[in-house]
Image (cartoon, rainbow, N blue to C red):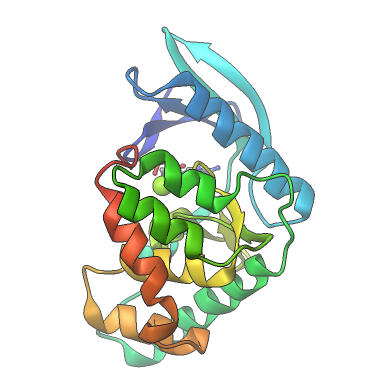
Length: 218
Ligand SMILES: Nc1ncnc2c1ncn2[C@@H]1O[C@H](COP(=O)(O)OP(=O)(O)O)[C@@H](O)[C@H]1O
Ligand SMILES: [Mg+2]
């Protein structure tokens, strides 16, 4: 199989004409892989633009998921801070895409507070998590520019569903804000477009920072 990409959790190989095989690294827990498969199936059923997950497979002792292949390029290839006009256009598209995701109700997904509590190591953090708002919105949990593919028609397509949960939009905004921390300008441009300010996401950011070190390596 020809490798076409490499992520933090898996390598991506061509699989026939129109599919890819996401083959996870050997040490990756099997239950996480099944969890991603279920999340991807759920997202697809909700009508989110995402590749269909066909099946779980084992290849050379490694577990993998067969997905439809998206022909296009990662959004990070389009986001160029040196070209202000194009930067603004793609950031607008990214945030519009994110806003549409929150509108989906993900009642069958894991509750984001349960997800966070799995990684909390102190009573103080658990107490903070308990105080956060509840919600049923679709939370991707790992929404950054490498997890969005721009297809041949210019549509944004969502991939990498390991961290999907249900929860309030502010939690996912805080996660994306955190994931964009390598560039403060991009962070601020992102937050500005969501219509929120730092104060709104602060309680979520606080907890994300507290548990991040214990989350599965991504
Ligand atoms: N269905 C797909 N079609 C085309 N390319 C894909 C597909 N899924 C993943 N990729 C490519 O592989 C990369 C890594 O996949 P991803 O699911 O994000 O793995 P990881 O969990 O390791 O981050 C993506 O950023 C993308 O470039
Ligand atoms: Mg990824």
